[in-house]
Length: 197
Image (cartoon, rainbow, N blue to C red; front, side):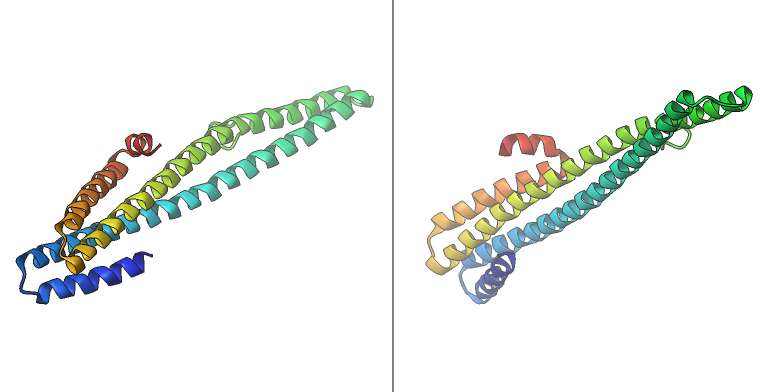
């Protein structure tokens, strides 16, 4: 749809530039400005979508790493329980092995130095999910901005074809709404999402 709007905008702007009417030139300029901000919105939307998808992959990888640590921890815990049931020949060797296993379990549970303990992985994965959700919200907000700007371009084009200035006023209103939403999404996604919901 964006390509069709760009084509209509291009033809209308070209027509306005070659028309002798001053109002037609202003409408052509309005279309060009709206098309400029539409392009910016589309670019920012695609960037937010790409970043959101990359964060989704990172969050998934982090949860997979967490799950692998949990499985390894469970296997070692099972070994400890089995060893306690089976009598050991050498008490000192038995105690040493039990302490080594327990140290490994504890390290897998929390390892602040590397950030790869289960506790640290949970925090990291939740942060990645939060960031992912925020970028995907931005992507959806930019999609709405693009829709509003495209509608503004269409109304301005209809104004050129029909010479009814009411369509130009509608285009200016939609353009203004689109610019406010664009700036709001860029600077403060939470305020815009509250407005859109």
